[in-house]
Length: 125
Image (cartoon, rainbow, N blue to C red; front, side, top):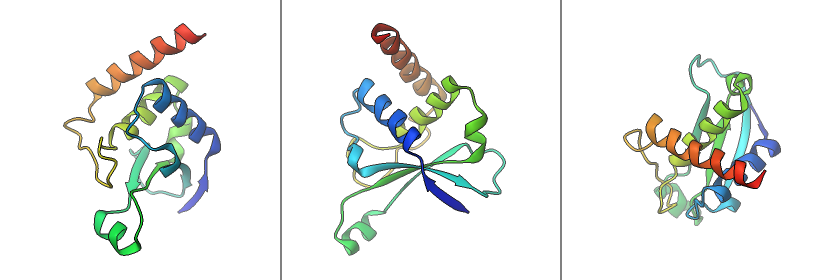
């Protein structure tokens, strides 16, 4: 696997967080990366974090990374935005190093947030 920082996706992720007022997400502690070489056939993106025990051992606060796999790039922009929203929804309100599960991070909630994002974009544009 190869990883590289994705500044363009970082900007898009930050725009979505700000537009959707996801104020619990500390932008300085979320980074976006592209990865190449994954053998997975279905995954588009993944959210990673440092578990609470490792945070304590390292004396650090929670930090999240969103990894975008090669298949992500082939999606239309709207679908990419939905994937970004999906991964952001995994970050809990506590921003403590845990994850929200797929009972909350579901297609219905992603669609609601995406529609809100698109409406906000239209108002700005």
